[in-house]
Image (cartoon, rainbow, N blue to C red; front, side, top):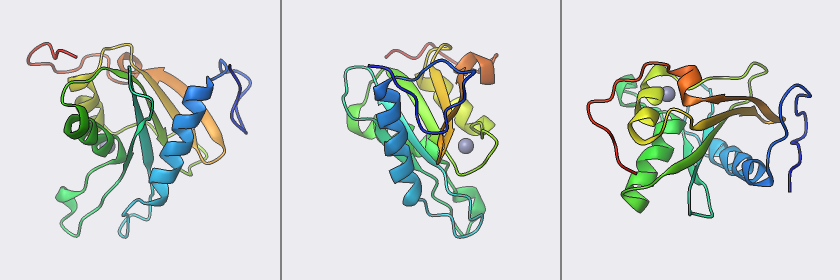
Length: 150
Ligand SMILES: [Zn+2]
């Protein structure tokens, strides 16, 4: 079953119920973000092939700013902790910004460590999914020291 999220842009292809469910997971994770410094809450949800529930992530800031970790990376590090080896199906990132917010370069590099170039990355806000890209769209030339196996 396919349907659109509230506020969904007409120009985009319809998203699946699975993506919408992951969007809800990302919004719940976003509510738990620890962002006392930036006040910029971000949620993410990483859907894995063969795993029903998407893995949530949120940004976790630190007084020592370098120790801050983004929502996308918390989702991927949780996937490693829970599953060891896994195959990402898609990632969704949610903020409350009007403009779609793309993952930072550090996160794109971490995503590339575990994902194929055609991994769908959905960008959303609290109203719905705003954009869909692939990893290759956002990081055309990732650094890969070795071929990561799923
Ligand atoms: Zn990031």
